[in-house]
Length: 319
Length: 248
Image 1 (spheres, one colour):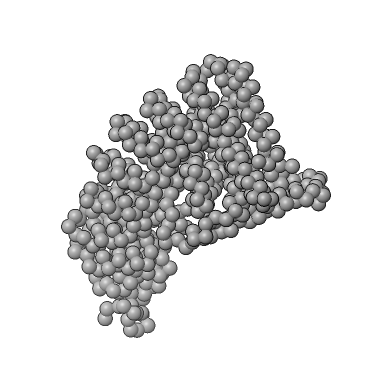
Image 2: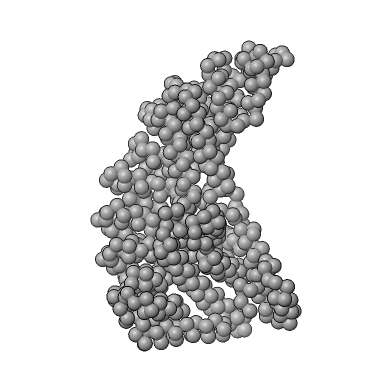
């Protein structure tokens, strides 16, 4: 170890030991001066070797100290790669109170120890809404997509399922989200998650599947969120082949959210229905499309179908 | 001379006398000059590091989607046309949820479609991280943790635009470095950085009290200190072992 760093570490650790010896960590919580001293001791503890830091951090956790100090002890424990540290975190997550308990769960996520992360499943099953949220956040921190998938797959209420799929969406867990298709039913939260994770293939399938109209509509609009050339063309195709006004409207909204004004112009030029052209034009205005001014100019020039006023029809225009 | 002072020198934030002093020391002290060169290299690497974990295209699309949702709502409220019904609510809900997910940092995903951006500090998946990369990565993370600690200390108390902008920058940087950590197989650092984000988001909340803000800042400062100390120790041990191997 570099001599300067070693000296610095030693200095910090000696400071911690001195403070502990002087009773700083044994002082009662509540006294601001003592609290400041205890925090200084904990700061100094950072530099201690793991085998020395472990018993001191546990002592703080189990003693009569402020919540802030205990939170710091939990973080120190999360950075110690020893089974005893993991056990202390799990114990705090099981038996701690209020915010400290949730903080212990967060620390298990930070620590990333597989066995400790596994313990969170039990806490999730027996916990209230706050605890379940903390466990999901811990899995998000740990990047444990499979654990969140298991919670979603075994959810016993729509709320539980939706909270889990929201996390999967944030994690970009496209594979796990797709696997939840049967469980998801028409859950809009699931479709939101698919869109956020960028899972276009499943959304495209759902957008073309008319067996559940509500889910189909949500998927069409979710495609708008995902965007991309392939998806945008799918939305244009869905609009063209729509079997109902609702589906057509959803496709149009998807195009709007994707910002695909070329597609809307294409539909405008292909349309022969003045009411439909009017609606498409309104969308183009909302999309702030550059093409809209030419179309308006054409419409005002006596060619309400948007054709070229100088004669002939533009590409894609019906005669 | 500490790294903070070298950083201030690099960013031309020292007054003329201080600048002359640092320049003179750099000219005299070869070790200090080497440290400064390493710092400059790290900062250069940072500029080339991937900017955000969420791909730019997706972020821009989601933000634009929220704007368009508002336009759509205006169009609806003007009563130009009825029948938006369920579709509209989904549209707005998805757009806002997605944008919020980005804003609060839930969108942690790597975009499979995003082109690889192997900066100088980024491990090549095939070749792994060699000794030089590891040391450079550790130094980079140390600089980041120090900067974050300093930024937190400078955070204005009042809930104004400057405070929100500073926290927004911190969140953005946090994501960048979490991504860098993942690419350098430093999952432990990536987890810590991911865990910082909800706290930063809470700090940015309008309804936060001065006491809560102070407590959260102290908590983050402590955790940053722990990580900084840990990194310093590991880097030092790594340097020591490399030196030992070289001498044998």
